[in-house]
Image (cartoon, rainbow, N blue to C red):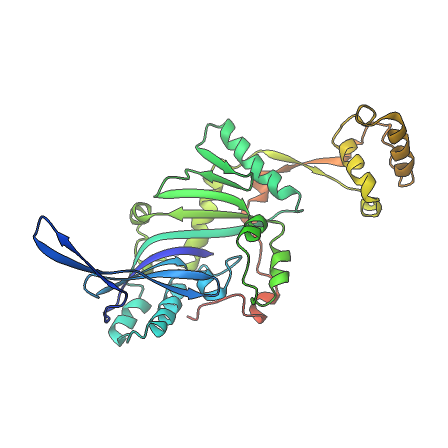
Length: 335
């Protein structure tokens, strides 16, 4: 999906935003420019800037979040998204968009200065999401890659590179820090949908876009947007394996007091050395009722090794939830 964008539209308009003046000491005259406006929708804002004597409008921000109210999922149609956002902004700012300028926008005749492309990967369980993030980091470090990690919830590749950077993070954890709008339809179902998601985001700056001839809107297609992200993930230093505990069907029936004991046993810990004899016997008797004997070595089949690269394959990309379109949570630009 197309996430953050910085676009420069050729749209003639009456200047908007507060005019600021300052004196150029070298030229000896005053220079006037328009300050940026913040146009808000839901809980996000777009930065809108009148430039070059009101011949250009620069728009920067999270376009899909502005339109949908969230960026958990969205469209890969950059041209359609840019058109719909510009039409909404010109309406809000009471800009009379001429037919000539509109035709240019419809043809994709505008400059793409920066773009974030995002995708979600469905992980089997919530517990495995931070393990995948940590596994990505450790594998990359072993290969000598330029990576950084924050709170074990986000791992960056080339974080400070303004031309091309890639990051993976825990989408559910991110939503806990940046909550969805309270009035968003199906809010709880969206939060539930995002629980097991690892998010990948590719940032392409101006130089990288120009190098790939993607610095103009008409160059973008849905297929190109998806392929750029898939190629970036595939060619990155993503790899390694994580342990997945294969829980028995009886696990959900275990009292909470004995679940941790079971997990420790499955991981190979010596329960006798962790507990005093009375506690060990008490837990052993309780777990034997579920045909689990912590006095014996754990079965090898209780642990499975999961390939991280397979978790982040195109085939494992999360699909839109069925309720998204009906609830107006998925904006699909018209052709």
